[in-house]
Image 1 (cartoon, rainbow, N blue to C red):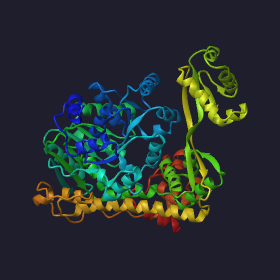
Image 2 (spheres, one colour):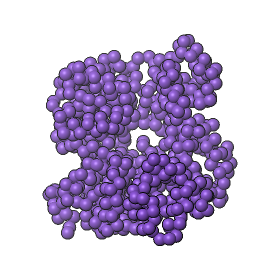
Image 3 (cartoon, rainbow, N blue to C red):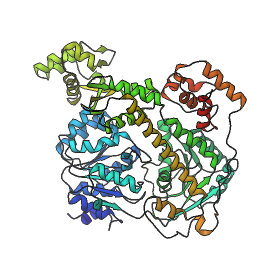
Image 4 (cartoon, one colour):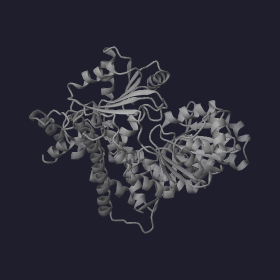
Length: 637
């Protein structure tokens, strides 16, 4: 069957969109490819169609749970064997998915990057022929990109370990430098980089400079005057989503909030009603829309400034995917910068925290394992920052990763223990008997610390984990894993100088911080410039076009100039006294200036959350003051 015949038979399309056929042909010829298409440009078909024409399994790695759910349901409705593995899938369904993987009947399997830390899952993948690995949101692999995820750096090595036959990297937001890094990491030839034009004539861009006090009324006015159609309003903070949704409802508009602080069932209800068309407007943090395939969104509003041009292109690009005219509006106010900058500065770890982490790693011995969660708590860094720091140590050849494993297991037996033993060989029966003497028995569950159990019975930890895994695979038990740990060894000739390693790591984090601030400043430049908006965005991604003729700048209704802003808040005498009193309490988790600055700016950290300091009256007292001003004040006390 030819690609065009498969396109017609399985997807009811008469022809390919721009770039799709070129990508499909590269993959069918056995080479890897990079597909750099705009949001809504049809990236998914570039792996779904080859999956049906290639022997073996297509493994799709995506951080977007909503995308996996929507695509799997759509493919299954077309009779295409597809499945997803995530935390919502029941044990019985997981067993069926594993069986279809092994018998070769499954064509597409969607997983989140975190699933690739599951040793049992990797063991099953090794038994499969993986004809194609599709990496969605591939820009996450670049440490200089706008959304770096350290786990993505593992994908290239994993592909080699699993003998993947070809790789397809997909993204809508990669600058030329980031695209080059993606090609380098995945071994993709420059000639197999397929990039379509970013220009979408049906999107009309407008910028509305406004003060913070005028913004609510302006949003209501714009939305009441707009043509009918589904709308998304993007905001920065969860409380802003709730407040703005309330304002729109009081104005007679059908709006609801969506953010990560809501209960899962409430978020699902908002998304489902929006997809069905019974909800007109979603006021959301940027978590909404990632992977949601709704083609007829007519309007996207940025109530707050987007944090980068990449984010703006991705978020505004969710409108008008059906090709009809859609509007993309920014209500531009420079007062947003304080909150956005504070998030960036607040994420950067202190030099002392990084030094402590480096010392901890180097003192563990030649072979060791660590819990990123424990390091996050003890060094007061978010888990993603710990992961990034460890990744830097890997990139510098100081440590060598040897794979993740779970240090704890909870086991619920589904039959009598004696009956379970009868179905296994004598050697395994003996090991299981001794193993279950070491666990802590509850009403339903047996809990095991793998290292302690292995020591008690004189067995290798791998043998203990294998024994428990066999119980799960034979449907004799439900197994829940916990205490994820990562194994490493010190590189034989790696650097051991703590000071120089720490200095280099501090420079890296500061460079990332500066890059994020620069990306934010480019958003301000866009909003203050009188240049064509789409032309400016496309130039950022290494492309070019004539002025669009449709945006505010082209129509002459937007002249540019500095954005409205109130005078940035400064620390007054009463607030300075509050800082002094809190500092004098010598609270251990607020000992460092950066930790105390985070606290007063309302930026949670693992330590402040654990100690419930985010309930303190002073938490967030200076959330309207620039982080660097707060930090400088504390450092000079």
